[in-house]
Image (tube, rainbow, N blue to C red; front, side):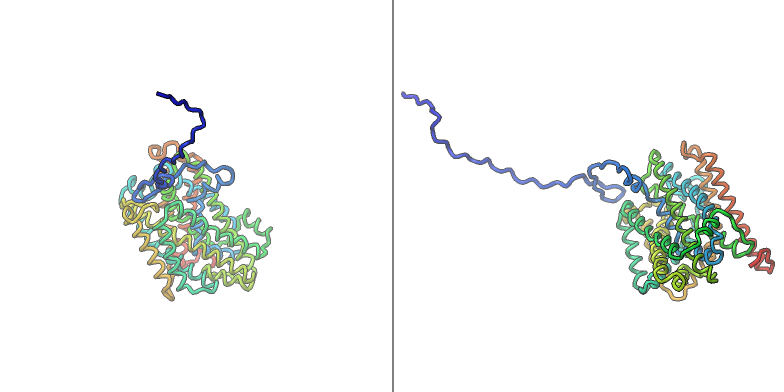
Length: 463
């Protein structure tokens, strides 16, 4: 047998490609789970924003609650203060800013410490009777205010040359869809964008060419007029700046956002920034009307739309248009926040699940209430000749009655050691909180007393 040894020169057999494995289905990053009835995709964790982005990331409930307080009724009140008394009531805004920041911070801290809404805590700690009393006034007061916000939307777009009967239904549908179909994070971003509409007021004030020396004096030197009109506007500024629905909304929004106790320091910054910016915009409204309407003797403003119309011949069409844009942004924001705050309140009193992150299956009661409030507000706002201005006067009285009650509950709850732990009130916060309650109560007592005495022909103060 002959053995052949390989020489290395033999022909090579053609190479065969291994079979290609079947193409795998691409898997999208993250996993999908169901949380509280809503399908959520969990993606890769991102690094915490740093620098300016970090400060922007913490803004949310405080900015929204503060901006929502400058609603259509608030704009009308600030405009009337500027037209009637010029710069003399700016010091009131400075004073109220401190009180507003303290009250809203306590509300946000309650939400972060307990994970519960305000009416929820009132029901559990003080009983169903007190919670029903509070929510009853909230329902009546906020119900009329919701109609006022949609009227503000209509008035603003008509000043811009658009029919209210087209925009009001469209705005209602957009606001409803945003809240019902969106997550809290998405809703918060849109609300923050709406708040940018308030930037129109500083521009309007600058275009009005105010006397900045007089502005500074009005802000730091208290000027008091002993007249019933001044007292009424003083109480009106208190009522429209520190409103119960702001506390209710911010506490519920902090809970909905999932702010933990250990992260509360950032939420405190959001609250302070939101309240300062809110009242800064309020001051610019007073400055704009004081520099234009007060100096020419136009001292009576019936609504925010009246203020925008009155600005045009004095400060120009552009300033009036900016005022209208600010009114539109304010009314849109409050037109969503007010129904939300009311739905939060009622749901908390009766123990129903609530939250923007819920879908209709899990949050049927909460989202149905929100839907009803939006529909009623939009429909009633389109009724010609509706006496909303007269109704808003009574609503300010109801809000005035509710505000001290809400403040008492907040102060008692935020001082509860078992409830708050290390986040309970300090001595300074108690001094400022109870001082605010005293100020509000005294102002409301004086207002009601002068009105009752005036009704029987006894005039203690001038007109």
